[in-house]
Image 1 (cartoon, rainbow, N blue to C red):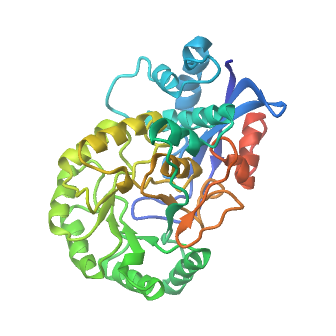
Image 2 (cartoon, helix red, strand yellow):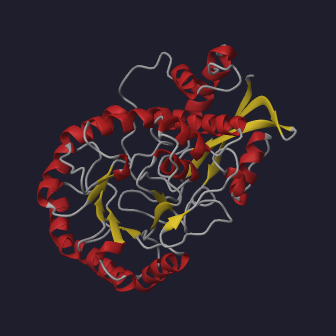
Length: 394
């Protein structure tokens, strides 16, 4: 078997919303289609992937470096020991050939996007859902289904006041979510506290609300927010400062008495290891949010999980960023603690299979082979258009 072609396109996911650091008015995502010569149900198997929101489409890196490198490789060198399927680990090594360590930049996003498509193809060739394949290979056959999910939203937007924020959160509860997340740091502390209290009036108490500063704060501001947030006993206080400022995180962890979360902007096992070594996080109470689609893919994520367990962390403390089906499969198949969800934004990439509903804060997975993109109608239409080389109209 062999990869016959790889097609790449940029798809807009622009929106007027903003967090504390950026707005999404020009945001896009890369979609890749890895086409193989394996035939299932009369058609070639195609693996699909995309990069998570918050990082722009790495089209140049994909087209100029990583896709040519993969297509130029000896096809046999990319196969597993059976010779009948692709080997994601060998493919990852091929993608990273002649790449220096460190300075990860956006190449981790390009590799993560391709890695997603490879795993989708591998599971489709095996004719099993990806989460079952992962459970069998890396979790003693145990599938954690359904998966706990939380609704991420609460963005800043023009004309969005307290009433609109409350309506948004009420909609999430009506959809079946029990924990919601909102943005902070894009206004004054006083205004953010008013927003938090407005949401608490809807969700009941802090155990049902997480907040996310998206790395906006310096240390004095992070501490001031921590002091103000502490009485609410929130589900977590997320990414207060720059993701690589481990000293800030360590100082904040010493003073803030409740759960914290971070990691979505760390793009390698080595950076994740530095967070664990120097960030002062508590493995019993804090949460880690590494996103495979942004951080060299699932192959690298498996190394990160191994590192975490060697350092006394349970994989149940990992709740990936991204709100997409790849992370959901990983949560179910690897026994992670849950998954983010975007029920209202970043469509059609956010969210899960069309026919599966959130119930009591959990969501199930479809039985279709691969990641399950085919069960999300608006998304698979775009992906198939990319595979066919068609113009993408969104």
